[in-house]
Length: 208
Image 1 (tube, rainbow, N blue to C red):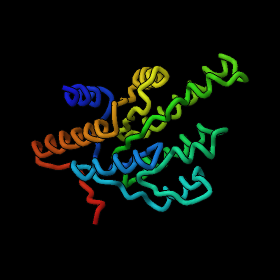
Image 2: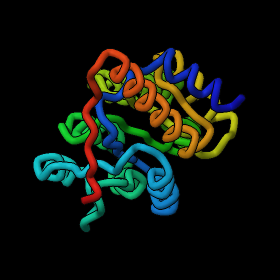
Image 3: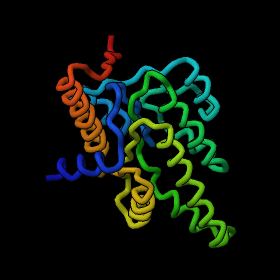
């Protein structure tokens, strides 16, 4: 039943991927490992990002090199707390990469809560920040490739994220596994429809 509703949400909010190359954006290394392992059991493959994408992402890196896929956006955010939207803007390089067909991203935990507790911020400023953060995610979606999110903390603050994002047709799933499996189902559906019409969607094997 969970898979049914996940897929219904995906069809309502997303186009089908044109290929099977997946990019993963996490907030921790452990989540990245778990999300990558899921790809070993389904039809999606980890995308190999281009050098030009690496050069663009390097602008938001910490003072050391980090892997591109999955990319740990959490450590990037820690070094750009005064310019969080800049990090989100930099992440647009990932879906813009020609080798990427779909993207999943972990929601940052308690980002709204952290700002709301800042006594130096007025309510108006806080609302503007929320709009700015939301628009940063919407801009990633507007690139045109399937873009899904998964939850982190499951608390009331994150409930607000989910409500705002899904009002902008950004699907949020309960886990990385459910998000990735749903994108995989979309890809398999696309493949099935293409076979019925005598053609096929593009498939990239990035493991070899």
